[in-house]
Length: 430
Image (cartoon, rainbow, N blue to C red):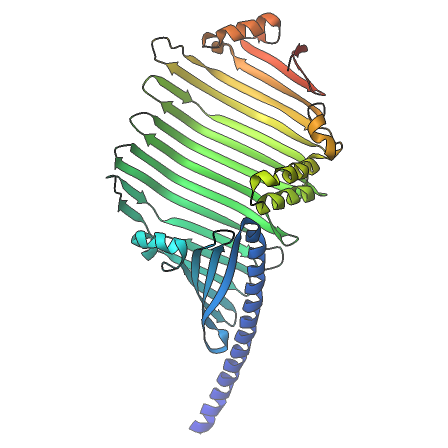
């Protein structure tokens, strides 16, 4: 009876184990195929920049469910060199795959650097996971913290660098990544101190016809300070973002920049900039021609010899026309010149406008560039700027009518038509 019971219980267990092994084997094959595809896509992206990637299998376990791999990144060209290698351990289960990885401290140029920064190497933690029911891969990597004295007596302190990413495993490869650094500082040296806090870089991307395309990208800085005997700088709250899309073969992008405050001081000068913002919109770029321009630029080993071809590609990009819209530029500042003959200034500046390039023959773009430009710029300045070092120029512009004093503001409308510039409908010689 006991043997029969053992057989009844044991057979399903053996059967499930065999099924799990079969599924695991299928997943191992699928992993191999996906890895090869990803490696090809990575090389397609990096080859134009002179970098190749090669995968080396170090060890493979039963059914390929466990393995150790090395990914070698190598710089090509006249002076080839091994940049770095990633050591990768993989575990493949019936309904899940995962792995851990580190930058190898014994291989490549990065390995030599890591040997000089043992704390950074020892604290490396890299991991990824893929759940079968989600079809999405998640990854995270971080370095160790660094607190290292330098030969000049200063100390470099670096918080862990953290990279987080996720991506779909289908052909679109829609994903996002974030790189963050809590702080980095250099202190105690004769040249002064510097510190950066709360740095973050983010991007969202997908594959477009097999080529990576960045939909959104942005970075932010919490604060940056530099203090030296000659100069001090304090920056607070910098945020830059860019978004791009392609519609009917035309590329458009929007770029924004915001600054909380900035102060730059020297022995006899002081500049304080209050909250400022910039918004710039680019439209009308032919995506296919722009891709060819990038490919030519990346493949050019000699800038001088490649210049004619680059100019030709750039002309092709703009042949169908393009436009740049300055949606917003606003800033306010105070400038103090403490030198004996110095004159300070304070006020605010507001600008907005648009410049368009009319479509035309690509071969005559350089000759016709100015006449194909049309645009308008609205200038709005505070009257307090007239008390600064440019006071004479402002008075001259007011007397000519190119600048108007309206409700305590200095106003002008700059217009560009077929290469001819005017201010408040008065011709401006170019």
